[in-house]
Amino acid sequence: MNEFGERLRALRLEKGIGQVELAKELQVGKSVISLWELGKCEPTLSKLIAISRFFGVTIDYLAGLED
Image (tube, rainbow, N blue to C red):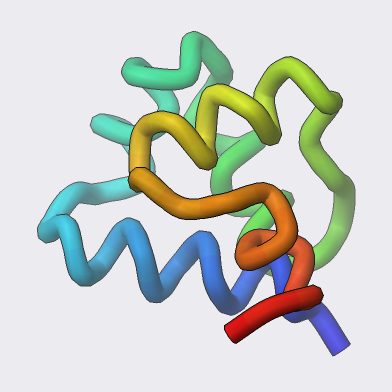
């Protein structure tokens, strides 16, 4: 199960932004966002923190540890 990728995609769509815009915000390539959403790789801790701050959610939420 790719809880992180599914939640990342849902948050991105809720905010109405594309992968390119999120990639620019997080200073990564667009392909990295795609790989995260597909569960092919995982973000570093610093990127995980940046994602949680950008979307206003906890890291536990992103990891699927809380609803």
